[in-house]
Amino acid sequence: MATASSTATTKVTLPSDREILITREFDAPRDLVFKAMTDPDLIPRWWGPRGYTTTVDKMDVRPGGSWRYVVREPDGRESAFRGEYREIVAPERVVQTFEWEPMAGHISVDTATFTEHDGRTLVTTRSLFSSKEDRDGMIQSGMEKGLRETHDRFSELLVELRDSAR
Amino acid sequence: MQATLSALAEPNRRQIVELLRRKPRAVGEIVERLGLRQPQVSKHLRVLSEAGLVQAHPVAQQRVYSLRAQPLKELDDWLEPYRRTWDERFNQLDDVLRDLKRKKEKRDGHGK
Image 1: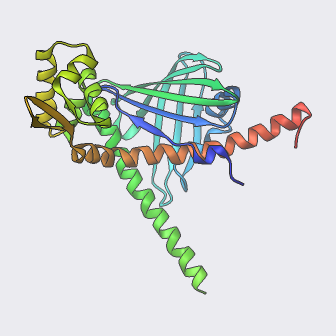
Image 2: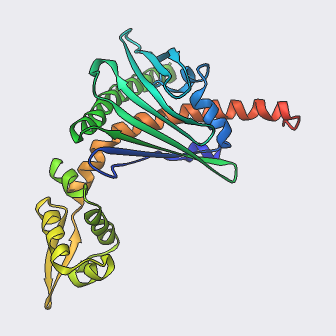
Image 3: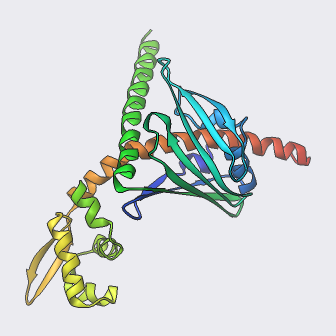
């Protein structure tokens, strides 16, 4: 089934030295988008990269509450992400801190804003880092993951080619 | 890469890059569009030029600036894996939202 949302693009820009801005539109009203992003039962279904298993260890969605997700890679390696909620305004805005445990101390403050238009929702996430080095480091870590995913996809393609050759 | 990032960290310089994305422009035109004073614009153009983001060509009595694609391409390549990580996450979120919508429609009694 072809839907408009399948052609939605994720935009990443760098509005300043210490920020990353991500925007993406979804084909759903914002109460549903807000729910999908704040419901512990739904997080495992989308948060981790494809092929990874995400477990919600803690998710106390209220100002001052903490969250912690454990991500398990296909090769069994595990690492966790954690943070604290600073502001919850359903279904408009969530402000939370974000930290990857292997790089503890490099914390960003992420503000997600949800705006609805004609039944579609624009999600804007602004991540503010304490330094330019931290910001660049985060983009760099995405690069490593990205490369690994490319590799995974490539392996899948090989399997497909192998199967179709039979 | 770092020079590109530093040069683009300043809002006026980003605006100059935006202007030049459409077409090359003379310094006077950039001054007019930005509403800044000429010395300020010249300073920004110098930083952009040192970062390799713009180049100047003399045309008649004026200096016309145009964008150089290479540093922007490098910046884009650097951002691409990070963007892809989020893109994949959000594609999975699309599936979750489709499910939630279907359930909601059923509950509201106008399911298809």
